[in-house]
Length: 410
Image (tube, rainbow, N blue to C red; front, side, top):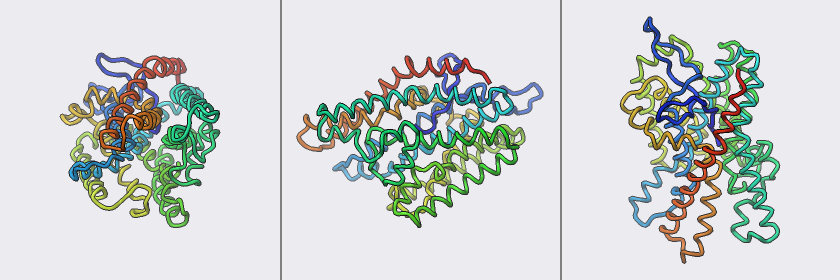
């Protein structure tokens, strides 16, 4: 999944220990402190919960066609819900970038970062890939037939998923050719490719150079999307799945991490939060206009500017969540169910497409036609089972591994 950071192992009463950043208490001289990566901000769990909720909507209910035109219009207005992955990217850039900035002078900088990253990402990802591959092999000898086999079939070679290069081959092949149960892993490949270079930049470059290079990522991503859309037949889809084309969302997250570690900028943000709400509102209005238009994902209608708007929109909400807990932040982003959903977001992201497809196919023999009830029931069952297994995975598999990874110190 895109956007899974390295959760903190610290615990607090009635709070799931997942986000790795928090606001420190005011210093005695009443100066606003700079944020560090040693603690956590509960609201970021809520943002992560929103991100995975958007992804679930995009991959389930968005495809249902209702008889009632009002319901159809409501579904139509959620068609940017695929952008939950953009929110994951912004969060990831902020959290991982912050960890690297705080540890850039550590003797164990590279070793600790990549070991902790491996403990967080690889075990559950590898398990999902292994189970998918074994199921595919079973289908090859006749255990699975017809549409069931299609869950694991496609033009994308299996080895690309194990090397985090599947997004490159997806871009060359075009949309809807990936293995259905694993197609969402393109965003995980984007992140891992981005984090091959970011640690080097933060370790050896000055703060000023880091800012300039990250701004270059942001501007370059927008320009590259336009170039691909003009010159390649799969340019719109390639702009969606290739790392350089999505580096702006990750870059905005990194810039935000730099910004909140500058005391002057931190104080300014704290005293001008209304501007952040204004920016979020203005950008949200722009997204509303896009939803009301004829825009479709993988189209060249806006030449990739939708990604820039989405990245800025989610960055605004990230900074709102980080700079303080007002009524909205406490009521929405610190909502307990939403925070718990954010806690199990990674496992949910990796597994949800398989269970959605499985229940859709499994219930096809129960329902005589592709009715709305059939679609809704299969989606609800698929999501419910995904969340249950993701919770078990986090409690008994992922969390112990994360704690083990934190035995390595910067």
